[in-house]
Image 1: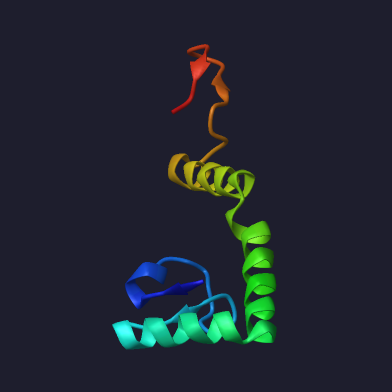
Image 2 (image 1 turned 135 degrees about the horizontal axis):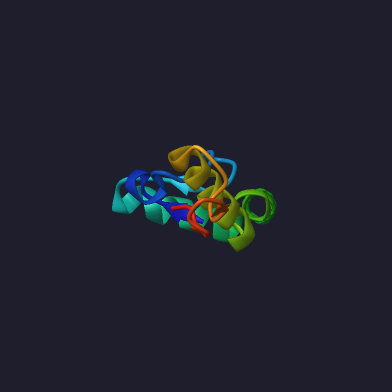
Amino acid sequence: MVSTTIGAEGLDVVAGEHLAIADTAEGLARHCADLLTDRAARAATVTAAARLHTVRYRPGHAAARVRQAALRATGGPAGVATPAAGRRAP
């Protein structure tokens, strides 16, 4: 994958490992050409990116991160019934 700095912002990626980053048309074209012509670099990048995707970005992982954020925000387990009201906690 090739991206700009802004395009990769917020992703847990390492430039040169999971993707190539450039902020000019020339830089983007150069990285694309490099990955198209350098089979070993392409394979290493694909392997690292696929591993990162499996560990960090699959739907189940995203759902777990949302649950963790909800727990932190509410101070307790999300969706647990409250005994007094018999309703689910926010």
